[in-house]
Length: 213
Image 1 (cartoon, rainbow, N blue to C red):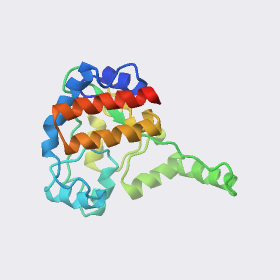
Image 2 (tube, one colour; image 1 turned 90 degrees about the vertical axis):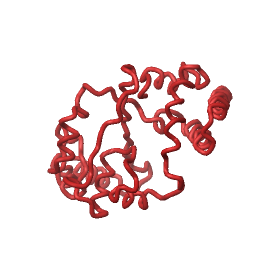
Image 3 (cartoon, rainbow, N blue to C red; image 1 turned 135 degrees about the vertical axis):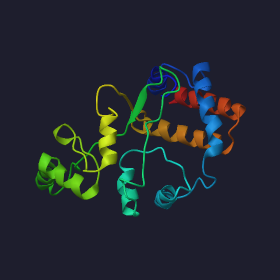
């Protein structure tokens, strides 16, 4: 996505293979940075927050929802926490992840109409204003509601809520669940054995799995 956004979309829809030389080349950047990852890869999210605040971890690849958790751990969002958008590696790498999920009401819910009413109230502008106020999270309601904190305003000022940004579907939602889980398992193997030969083998395994689906 940061090397070639169109290449990423080709991997999503299957028009480009993982074993394609362009894919292998793009992933070399990942191999180079794996050595900077924390040694304890099984650490729960909640235990990462104090390490980010203290500076034990330099940064994390996350969305603005993390700010609420950091604030809950005692961080002052106007003083203790900064951010930056992941830069493009090449001019074609201008994609940003759009993390989005649907809200659904069970078909056989006994309280379907009441639930719909709750959802309408919660997703109204007034409801989302209260959400933003309490939880320090941004909302797309009314063109974009943000908490009254400098760090959120700096995100707006950077243009991330405008058409200057090319948003991409996140892998987790963009491909079938079975395929997503398989690729995550294979990439975990690369993290544990970050070598070019392991990466190349894994990329071929992913192609083989997809062809059999």
